[in-house]
Length: 398
Image (tube, rainbow, N blue to C red):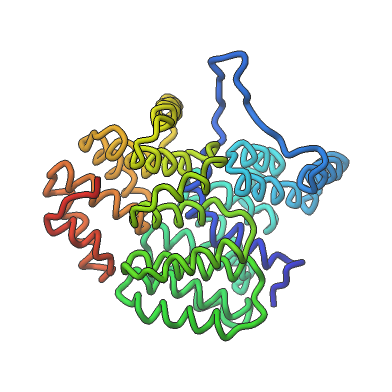
């Protein structure tokens, strides 16, 4: 069995959430050249914070033995966690640097392979990440973290049968709640949303000993399923998730989307006003400001435009989903939004990816793109009434 000390929390934080979070919080660690000498490049954790002290301690330990995979992995793990908590992609570059001796080694030790896969997927290099995970499971067929990570990446790619097989293999080697949530995530997008919702709800209610991260994951998924089904219980689940775990940028984005869909933009402002370092969260803040006709929307939109332009100049395509939402709802350019949404769909196929494709295609009046949406709904039996209505000729929300 996995325990917190052996990585139970990381199984969730670094394996199950990382693929969705990369769409929400991280980008490739590409070089950034500032245009203003006064521009703040990075705000490090305060020197008196536990996070800073931990990083410094791990840095010292790794420097003393640069070829010690255990020390390097501990430091890389801390950097990956920092990238998720802080919404700062530079920490992923630091994580990669910590693994430099094993970064291109096809037979790297398992701890390095797990972290390498985590970092690779954050730049949407899903196939190389899967290759590393395959190497691990060939060595250790019952490696829970590798199975859970691979199931997540496969789910993001829309390869549901293979993902479900990995979830099932978690039986007996990880706490049962992780297997249940893993399978529910897949069932909820393949025609079994109601049973998935009920099964997951029972499991969370009937299992007293669930760590905060596991409960937050399960509650977030319940909120997402309820949101897609138009069930107001979504808010209860999102709030429970916020109370259950540590700061989670993905969860903040999911709850903000629910608030925006329910004409409660005013509540998004205090939720996200201090999260503007994250492009996806700044996007949602800008959408809320625009809905409320707040003057700050102009500044937020300008900042997003600058950031997306810089990403394009670097050849960075990681935030195409958010870029598509920006073009459609903040710049009112349906054609550009559809191009971005189509390119994004070639890489990842989560519910939010399908929705923005449907919204952009509907706004642009593109029958071929809507056909892609219809085909996916038919093939997967995915139940998402908002998307189905758009695919059938509805109009994207303003």
